[in-house]
Amino acid sequence: MEKILAPSILAGNHANLNHALKIAEVDGRKWIHLDIMDGHFVPNLSFGPQTVADLRKESGLFFDVHLMLDNPHLYVNAFHEAGADLITIHIEPSYDHLEAIKHIKSLGKKVGIALNPGTSVDDIYKVINAVSVDLVLCMTVNPGFGGQSFIYDILKKVEVLAKHRDNTANNFMIEVDGGVGFEHIQPCLNAGVDIFVAGTAYYKGSDSERREFAQAVGEKF
Image 1 (spheres, helix red, strand yellow):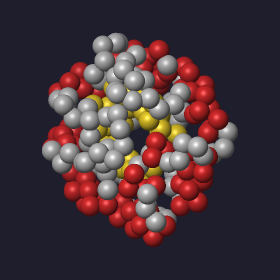
Image 2: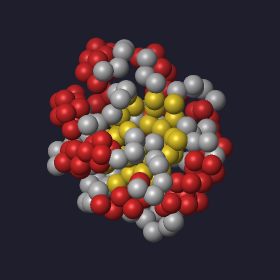
Image 3: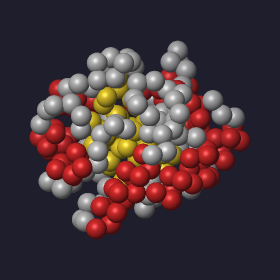
């Protein structure tokens, strides 16, 4: 399966997010990760559909939109209209996950399901065994803020998910997000990770460091 490095624009300069987009484009990245936080599900705020829509006008990158919201199902249409290519929702809040996934798919978007570090992989089986998803996102920090330390134990979840994928017809990609740095790439690859979300490590790095990061993942710079 293709390996992808998806810079997290949350770590870019918020006074000039378009510049962060252009860095990723010039580097040759294919995806950009956009974390949407509501201050309730996670203890932080980021930006909403208007920001995504404005960025969409400036870029042809694949928009990987991660909804860290108490009620993500209520905002699917807004982020669809804003230009998201993939919409990931969390398993933890209480809402009809299956209906939300079906709705995202009906809009012609790719769909992901995410789980936090404290959430068991078993909690998502009832969803991914009932309806196909394109991506499963394993948070490798407790979400809300950038610059946190990568939780290595989460790779055990990745291994379980990779085995589940191999033994079923669920051909989803596995994504990790949170504290991902160069030193985590090989352990993640070994566990079965396909998509690497990198914020601080990517945007605070030099041109050569970003090139090395991408090459280690398996993308061309």
